[in-house]
Every structure is written in C-alpha cells, then in structure tokens.
Length: 485
Image (cartoon, rainbow, N blue to C red):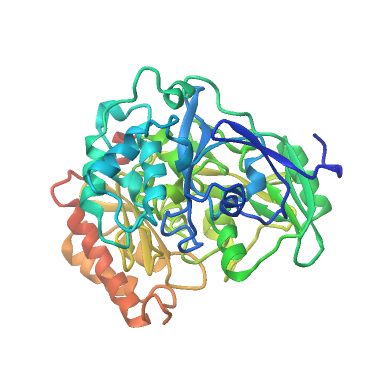
C-alpha cells in the first residue's frame, strides 16, 4: 500500500469468530466499537487503562511463529488498529452453553462479586490460561495486575486462577496458537468525526519507508504505537488527531539485534515482548519491566513510545540513561544516532525533528554488573512514579570504576546524575563513600511540588536511594564487567 489517499471507509475485524466492520470516526476506541456491536461484557471503568474492566484478548504474533493470545485495554486501543485482526471478548470464550474453564472457576469459587470488573478479569485470566509456557512455571498472578476489583474480592479470584488446569485437547483457542497470527494489514482509513464533521484519517503503512514519507509530507501527524498514552488523551482530554500514523507493526522497528558492541531494540517492540525475549540478558531492564504499569499496559506500550512522549516521569528513561542508551532517529533523509542523555531538551521537548521517528534503542556493551531500578510511587504496581532511579555501577578492585545514574520525576526532563557519578568514580565502594555521595544526589535536578509528591519528599527519596542501592548489593561479590554478558 502506498501513502496515497484511498477511499477506505471501513475496517474489518474478526470478533469471536465472526468478521465485523468498523466504520466509525478514527478516534473511536475498541471498547466503544465492541459495545456498539452489542458485546457489553467489557466496561469503561477509568478510561485510562488502570482498572482493566475493558480488557479483551487479541491475537498477536508469538516468537515461535504462532499466535499468542494477549490481553489489552480496549479503552485505549483505536478500533481502526484492529483492522485485519482477531479479537476474543469475554462473551466469546464460552462454547455454546458450555462455559469456559476460566468462567467456571470464577463462578464456583466466588470470584465474581458486583460483577462489573469480572469480564475484564476473565479476559486477562484467559490470556494467561493460554500462555504457551504456563505448564512449566504455573499461573502468573501478575498477569492480573492491571485488573482492579472494587469489592476487594481478590482471594477468590486468586483461587480461581490457581485452580486452572491445562486447556483440553479440543480447545479451539488453544489450537489457534499453532497457526500464525494475522499479518499486520496496511490501513488507510478515513471517516468524518460525527461531532465536528471534520475528516479524520488513520494510517498504518506497510513499510518504514512509507511511514517516513507520510511524516515528511505531514510532520504534524500524530504518531502512535500502543496508544497507551494517546488513548488517555482522547478519552480524558478529548484529543482528536486529524491524521494518525500507526507504527506499531512495522517490521523494521520490531527487531532485536545483538552485536559485540551493543544490543539494539526495535522501538515498536512492546515491553512485554522485550521482557520475554531479553529474558534477563539486560538485568537492569529485567528489574524495570515488572514495575512498569501493569501487564495489560505492557502488552500494548512500546519502548519507543515511552521515550517519544518526552515525559519526565516515564519509567524507561532512568534505566536507559543508566545504561548509556542511544536512540536511532530515522526520516526520509536517513538515520542518525543520538545519546539519550542529549535527547531531552525541556518539558516534553526533545531533539527529534518533526519528521523523524524513533526506530531503535541501542544499549552499549559490556554492561555494568551492579544494577538497580527503584520506583517510588503511591502504589507498588500500576502507578505513575513520583521518583524513579536507575543505577549501573562497575567495581574494580574495591574501587568504583564507573557509575551511571538515571533520574526521572525530579526535573522537567529525565536526566543523568552527573555530579554524583563524578563523586563516586575512583572512590572505594564503602558506606562512607555512599553517605557522602547521597548528599550530592539529593541536590541533583530541581525537585518540584505536584500532586504526586512534594519537593521535600523527592529530595529525601534521592538521598536515601543510593544507600538503598548499596544495601541491595551487600552479599553480592563485586564482579567486573568482564564477567557480565
């Protein structure tokens, strides 16, 4: 498909085995589309991706070449993004009059109380039920971390999850895993916004070259991948994109490349995909992923999207700053590489030109062996950081040979704690050194007062974080970077 205008006015989605057409405004989310089809199991609870009442399952490519049933927040996902895809809602799990094993366990164990959140829980639980390697490591309760129960019925929900066996031999959704997921369909969808009458456009090009061409012609196009940030803008703030450019399925932005000098992560890889495929090979990211929002969000959010917003409170920048990551920025003019430490220039402002896409993130090798990701928030999971700190430290013969510290939530931009790094390097790795450096770290950035935390609190968290990091490493040998992959 080319970037030229087409007359496409509908998108086709396979929902619970039946092909249905979507022909609403491009800003319509998948939840509203599904409910308009009479599939009212999924609900709108928060419209921000925090409660999971809207959860559905979508068919996504698996690393094995088959299909992985993946739970996502339908309230954030544009309906047009489902063009050519397959969806299963809570209504589609039952086989005629025979309830699905997940539905049965939720019912018999009292997992449904008021019932509002139940279909979302069931969708997330079913996605975990069909996870290919669940038989090896058991049910992962964190797969439900994005689903909230307002009736405090978590114990019976947990009991239902732990009671699940393996899918039956004739389970159609289990069998579907053995076939390839639907290929990403090149989409150019246009339709009038019913409220304003203005034409909106949703484009998902087939190649990176087409995407950069579109952006060069229309640098004000709204670029989306998982839409976990843009979806909130649409739902809560009434944002409307005249032209939406979707880059989530571009193969050129979904690879993982390993060389002797760096690991390159495709910017359109979701955080869940990276978590599975890296499998701890980059330990600092392995510590970050479980603390990033919820499984529902990580199934949609991309690593490039988290950087592309330019937000000072994104969780990936502090860790990637500590890893000395670089970004690959691509336009019709070619590609260039920018150090992440030089990328942010102001509040939600960056050096990225309006016609450039973040196509990859490069993490240099070797990796520092001592790492930590600390996230200070009001909730342990599924929350926005008040302060986030990434550490990557290398100890040689008892001395700090290298220290890199990334900070988030303490200034208008994510930043490196360069003064603290300079104080640490060359000094002995002792509690005395840590206490001295902690005072310097407390003054890094410009901690501010807002609804998440006070400036005084943020300063206190910075001061204590280095001591916490040191305490985490007690009992661990001071290995050198040469011993790390």
